[in-house]
Image (cartoon, rainbow, N blue to C red; front, side, top):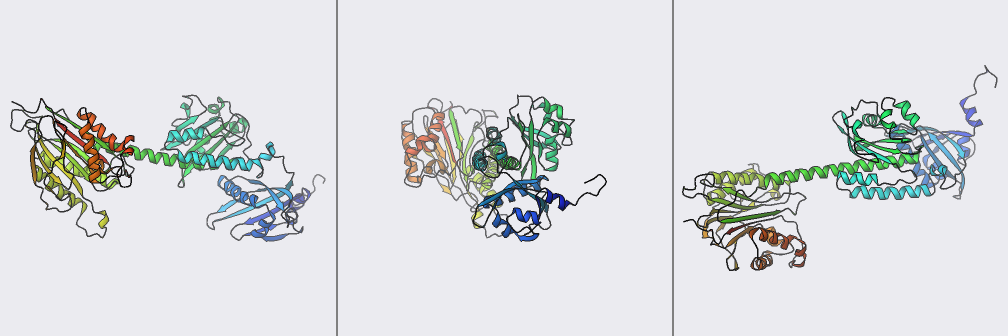
Length: 580
């Protein structure tokens, strides 16, 4: 061709280069090929319009699956889709290997991909060689699949953000492992560093709170939701000249920045940096993209779990009270163990309430030092049970602080719970009706006199000074919330010097496959044999029914440990039971 002559047509150039042209529309399922593309597919060398089934019949079945994955990846990244394909004859023998390069686009209206690309015959690379690694066949494929399975399993088992980052730092990708990692998050309009590996502490300083508008790869990834691959320092410097000095000091040769996307939202970016040049072939990009997706899901799960733990621990701190100041002549100990519902706080609770005329007032007044002990259990082990427990506990404290007697406190509490559970609207959801058992004991530490009102709760247990243990029967009424007009008679008895009263929820009795009878026998045996103070006894009770040794004393029923445990002990000291 002489200078000044018109350029040859595209078709003539492709034919001269033994390169075929093809077009694929997934909405119609048709693939148009020119004569050279048809020849490369083992068909007569003439233009044709083929169905997907006809094309698929000419390709190795494993490679067909690879094509769909590479196309989706390239469309998401806005890059070329490049893949090696083995062409088969009618007998299933490989007749040649071709390289397909195309520019896929996705039509969101039709939910379809459109591709226009080329086919060119290539020499099958030697397995294990750098060129062979970019193919879709051989050891690279098997190593990649094994790696992704192991990585997915490890990330799925991580239960905290720190564990997820440790797993990510330990990933050894097949054939190309990064020596530097960073996970970026987003707060408002700025980047944050969730964690990093391969850098020294403090190296993250310039990248913390970086504005999303900064000309930096991670910021661009978060803004656009598209991955950024930089195969050389020259490419990094040319594309991001302003922030290149920040990356230059780490002496890396290649970088991949990928979006961390969960539920359609880009929550951050993941950087994988390499100390050697990486071409980022379609297979390598596919591995990195898959890891980024798994990493985003793992971080989302870990963040949700950490939020739930923080919430439940906050609930526990706010809802489970301390026992207050020391009571002259008496020892009080309590334990709470959440075991069901996945929360660190459930429907069980205990409380110690100073009563009017208590320690804050003059001890010369009648009744000085009186307080109330409360033990309760709201039905259920879910968030609603915890919420009802908090409301009921506050109501009980309010009624007690007003100076009402035990029977009046429980009557008012029952009316209160019935009111918030049954809001006046008729409902067929009988399973959602809630009630609560409760034991309320008013204590006079000067005389040891207790006045007990009980609402469907287990009776108190008395451990006498000589070690004898017996259940102390008390009058009782219906659980709170069942009948707003229920009555709760009061039982009066005296805790003698050296005696201990135990009140608990049924979780302490029935945990470990026990019913009320066998569970009571287990607790009674421990109370009779125990030697130690009140705090040690509280620990021993919990360990006996919930600790490792409890598995040796299971009951006749299925060993289920789904009920929360609450126990409260009141001991009248042998030498401080009365005031002259």
